[in-house]
Image 1: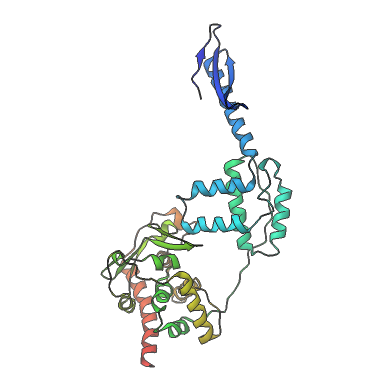
Image 2: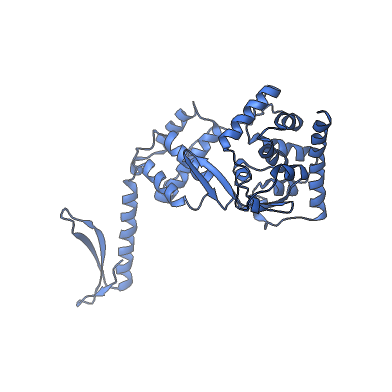
Length: 342
């Protein structure tokens, strides 16, 4: 905003940029008031109204694009990747609608249609992105969308013993055990470098994710709680071996690991399984063993409304060591059982 100028009349005037004319010359709008403060207030109000009018001319798609671009280096690669998938494939019936013409009725109709082909979770993710973009560019717009209820799907997963037996000796044994045993995400498994391992202690602080043809490598985990230190069991240390400090431990692509896992598990057990299901199995094991929530969430890097209110710290207390040993004993017994039956 230009500085205020006192006129010979005693009034104060402020000129504000208002665009360009057909010849490309700047258009200035003047605001005059008896006091400097009043003139500044009038100019500020105009600036806000002009910005709102400019935003209103944007389409929903342009608002979402702008929101994603502004958050690209702030949010995790997986979150940004999910946003881009939503922008390209979901709620397309809204993307060309100008913000000034957007209504809750139109939004509800679009989500009603999308509910015919998308899961409740995908719909909620799309709604979350739409809500964030509107909050930035149309802050006075209040969403009133009814979404499908969350579904609690129960999958018939193989047992940890069946998984260990199926992948033993294959080239995905290490990434599978890192997830099944230590509860690592795919991005965390692929982000491990040899320099992240000190003795038998592994620091999870990097991620490696691929979206489309582009690979993202960041010294950042999915959430604050995801950055953690884990004690690596001897069996996994043997599979990890040694390498150069900056070398990645797992060199397989995520798509390759997932494809091999699905095929092996289907062939050996007749069941369907994703790589992320390994973390669910790990959580089930901790539940079965009676591991306290505090330690289970620390090992898995999970966050919740409760844990976010506390200060994160590694708990290598005697109780934590006991929990680690309890889990290690469980998986070591399964490994030993397989070795004895060779």
